[in-house]
Length: 382
Image (cartoon, rainbow, N blue to C red; front, side):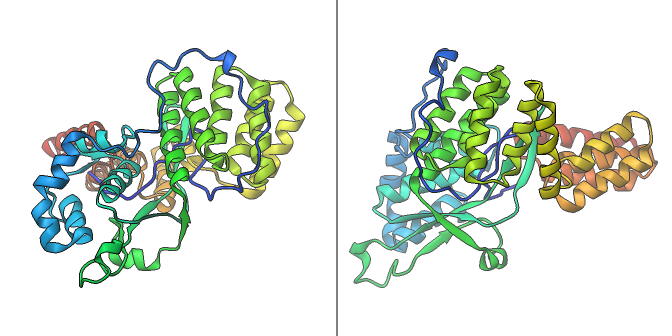
């Protein structure tokens, strides 16, 4: 499976990982707690970086000698990533806090950044978080679209090591190839924003499971931690929209657009909200405005390709899926359906290629296993 350094600031029609807006005061009527019940799960960000007893043993005992020999920065990074001592696995199915990621030996990239920061804090290493200025990447879960950004973490030297030959410089941890890191433009973000990203992920994941009470509580927590983090506001708006609270949803999306008037997710969501309210003229005006900013939204060609598949126009479907792959080659589902179209057209070799790419780009073990089984079937029958 892929190992990517992606922050899953999830956004089901929500919003991508954007630069945080200035922390201006929010309207007092933005939250309507009375509309939602208990979340059904603990909603607390105070334990995001908390080390478990097992993590303390790991840093004190298991890699203690390595840290003393190689220095704190190098010893920690080697233990976590280079020597695969933890055998960490990329898994985008759930956002975990530091202790959960360590226990599972898996996590999405935000979870792995959080776990690394937790260990660094224990070792008194200064930590800096960066958000990469890259184009958003997209995925989906049912009717929800999710935008993802990219974050990494820099470990500074300890003051106590200033007089030694070890740990004199800062060390950025990023699993992208070194040549990509050198070209990467980043924006430093606060730890509050990182915690808000964590809570926003949990909100989006809860919403994907249909647990709107938990989604509301997590989005509320994300906004409390960092009121300037626009994706969390957008998530709250989608929670209201999914819950049928259309005036509240419109209010939130209008607040987002007041801070960022070209926010494509808020424009799309507000248009959908106005449509549900019967405000068709206002919705149409927003869609015209959105088309000027984003003429081909995420999954545009994919959706056209799926329509072509339904009418058995496999050649048109292959061309449309190819257009999505050209602009988003990281996404497994695009490769899978391109492979299906190739298979329908009798191009078995191309079908194998794209099924293999779908497997390689999968983000959960479940996805990986499904594609592996389909690829094995194709290889055994042709």
